[in-house]
Length: 308
Image (cartoon, rainbow, N blue to C red; front, side):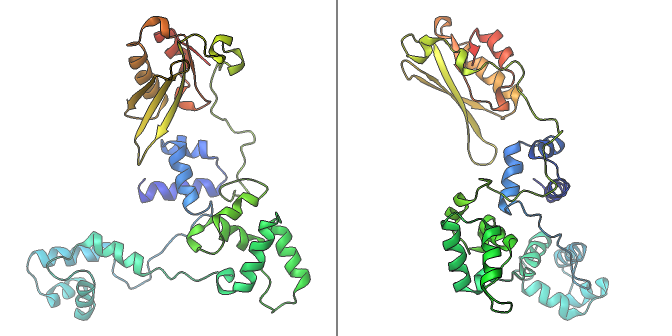
């Protein structure tokens, strides 16, 4: 996603939209939206702003073009209305005159501007150990925060809010609390949910006329007769994906390369592959509730295999 799309994603998440709503608005897979959300534990990152007086991306473009034209640093500085020392330091810290590139210098400037401050749990090993022990005993962050408030006096350094505990669990980049401790949270969520986020009353993606697995023929369950398949969608790096089809009796496996994971692409790819199989072994196809096969009726009409 572009930076603008990520910003819109976070704005929509902050406003209380669900992952499904955000995915439809951005025309992105829900899994991609979830990946971005999980990268920061579901916490909306602060909007980063450039400090007044610093070089802008346009300034860096002018420096890059001036160097390409063979201009001196003083000449470039005059055109920008900046001291020559500012231009000289900018070039020196970004690979020098021959290798200076505006976009690379811009990225480096944002990275250098980061001033991460260690959180309370990172600064206090005793408090961190106590919190970890309570979490391992299935205490909730709210219970831990309340216990500390009652047990330790103000100013002792042994108090922490429940929100700090949640952040230290969900934002693993902090390196404070072990990821395994999230398994002890009662909600079971992999990210912190926005208090405004609710799916009540929202339209949710549904598979029309879905057939429950309980209606699958008994012969498919006991694997006595070939022709009953189980399928799944496997996701790789980036936006790569492949569908797998496994025949339940013989364990014969077919891999279907797909150019996308949307409903139309998956349905078309499976239909093209399954129609090349003998008709007598195309009885049923069992799939999970993934929306990638919401077009199961079209697939069944094309291949003759009933979807379960």
